[in-house]
Image 1: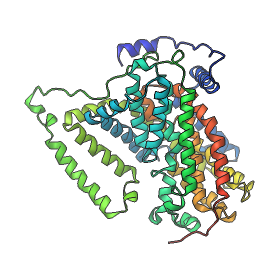
Image 2: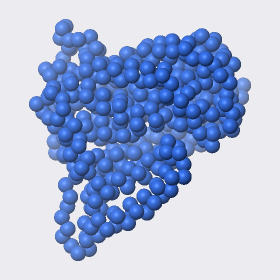
Image 3: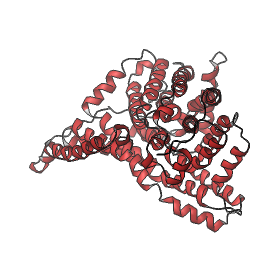
Length: 488
């Protein structure tokens, strides 16, 4: 931590004055919620710990014994370790690529486009949402580094908190409507679908999920709404708080390479080892891409992370530059490493601790929403259920495995289009991300901010997105006929 950051951390957080009466309504809402969060919103670690307590109490309320809840907690605590490592590598490899000399120049060029602080925030939101349709990790890291590059343009008077929230919108709005949708990817590949679920849903190709014209309509609306809300909630220059005013020191995007001083450092400054490692890894990647359909091959995080890692090695060229970039990226993974195990424990308590009737809390929640649904109201009820459960289990793919057997059987029983049921899940599942700090962790590490700094602005997005998404999911379901599952 620099001297500047230490002094900023020691100083009291300045209290924002109440917004003037002529402040636009959405900006006033964002500022007031942000001011409240700065005072009352806990650190992300405290937030997840409180969620653990709430789920444990809820599980015991349905009749599970304290011992069973404790066993479920312990069994689930390490269950996300592979995913935790994958997420840490997402943050590291994304930063390594974006901080390489070629990408740093691209980010800096992109940062020259906006002409003022508000348009800069909207610009970050647009980039984040569009990039999320290709891959959520690209969206999160690239938009975060773009926000940092824009923060260096002090003449913009850009609110750094609003820009950080805008960088997060791909995760909170559209990622699951794009190619990296865990649920859509799983349902499109028979080999990936659990046998018990395959009997219920059959194979559902992309043409019946993310490429439905109804899905494209929802995505286009969310892109427009996200960008507009980001612009309207961005504080005017007089009320904006820059990175410097928040005590955040913005270092250059690129990594300044050290100079070789000893003969033993020759390998560190030679591209020889980089070329050998990239050749080995590239051979495996080529095998994956040539032996599987493209979308199947690149859907796994392991493959994506290796591609990013190899690309980072090449872009930095010399091992020393690459290792320096990794060293600067590691602090961004702190929250991921300590908090993801707690989310694994939450998922386990929700799904494996059985109540007095032998059912889990997750089953009780799903049964409640399905029991009050009809064919007409099912899209709305499933959307609400997916959003609520997503707040406690913020893992798109893992939660789909938990939820799909119940909700897709109900879709069959109520004659709801199965592909649209997947899209209902995708669109609604992203909503709680806007106020849940789980997916913020890699971004917060890059921006050097707290969840409380962003959530006032993402809360305004949440209030705007929720009714729009639910109404669209309900209305567009009426345009899609039901068809029986297509079994392989």
